[in-house]
Length: 320
Image 1 (tube, rainbow, N blue to C red):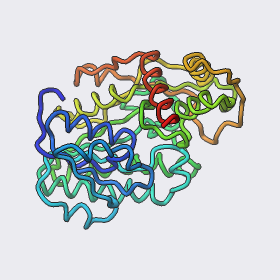
Image 2: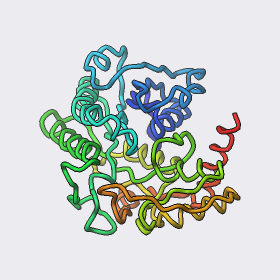
Image 3: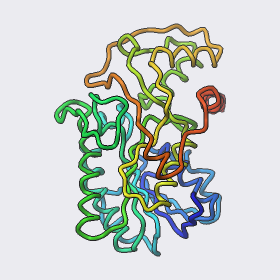
Image 4: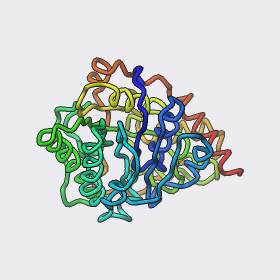
């Protein structure tokens, strides 16, 4: 974590996929962690091992409830705001809740960070770029977002949250940073969350057809969760305000991703093409020069290693 040791951190959405990995990494570094999550999309299984470790506390509460954050005892020197449905299946199921946590939830987390004099970091997303007309996407790109499309509840929630963080810093001097996280994969993803990697792995392990949207030519640049966490914590430990892109450099089509997963699992599954979702981005790859130059960060885990770790975790979870 760039040599900086946090005494006590609050992680909203800490029982989620990326949030739980952040909690674990902070604990390993000697930071006491309070994980606040309403378990609407996160799972208790993600943090069950952490609850047996000294310095960890789980609070089941909603970040949109101001009293939930205000009444947490003690002082934090780091607040990581990761509470938000992040997969299409979740934010399409919870559209109003997604908008609420991006607005009210972000405001509540900012107020707690400001009151404690803590460093605040917002988990934003590559979705703020929408279906980008610029490739790769730089942090200076304003995006191409449909504000009334089915994905807008997530896209606009995060865009508003970024504006709110920026305003809070300008008005109150709150120590803030914004990370724009690109597609991340790894252990603890849910098989039913609608994202490509867990969906393809679950289908391959089950011997079912891998459902590739459209003709599979749309691209993503995936980043293994350990690398994503490295980038998040490097930004938190820096003096940078962001936004800063954190994501993988290797662009891959969804058809090629499906084929690689079939190969790595040794599955006999075939490919089945399905309708492509509305406003599904055609190309997605971050320009990560800012993270490299300002944070000294770059992804280290290659495709084969990351996918093998992830497939192994899913295989063990299915067998358990």
